[in-house]
Length: 282
Figure (cartoon, rainbow, N blue to C red):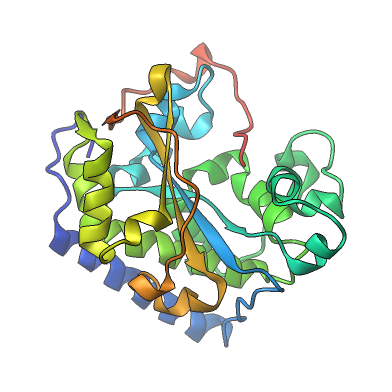
């Protein structure tokens, strides 16, 4: 929801969005043949990183393109948007002495060093089926700053994860969260502040008792009070059953304050007032 006066998304609306995503997936399969499997290469779990776009944009001193252009901000009106889908430390890297901290920081760049310059220049666009490309544009506004190319190069390129399957899976996961009661809770409360424990309770109410351990809240700004992202742990062999409670795995606790502000989308500044910037990712 934005300052345009639109009503908060309802549970029915979000369920409709999820059904639309499933139909989209079927159309992609029909047009492109069998979807490549997203089989993990010796790692335990994924971290699904979802940006709360208003909070991200508000926290940036020099907001990237997707924060400034209304057509790119619009997809954030209905819930979370995709930051990334991050495999945990693969066994073959661990056997070579790579620590989880180093894998988290460098990922696949350990094998293929990060190219110089922006990812928009260093990496070609993905050739995805038209339906999937459109869905990814909506789910990941940061694609305008080549966030998709960065995320794949860092987190998937070295792990035998086909780009089409990787992004199709990520789009479905975002839709599942935004169609949930947890997604509704965040959308309805944007513009105000809620207790950190209330966010965790809303997650558990949506996905099951004690599942709050799979939720990591990421906040920014003074005192870590501004919600900018949520991260959700998913077992690598249980993507198909997400968001069932059995598919969720614990993550580290976040560093948000006891009360968290959930920002609204602010009016975009004219493009000539800020320089273009490639959106950094994790």
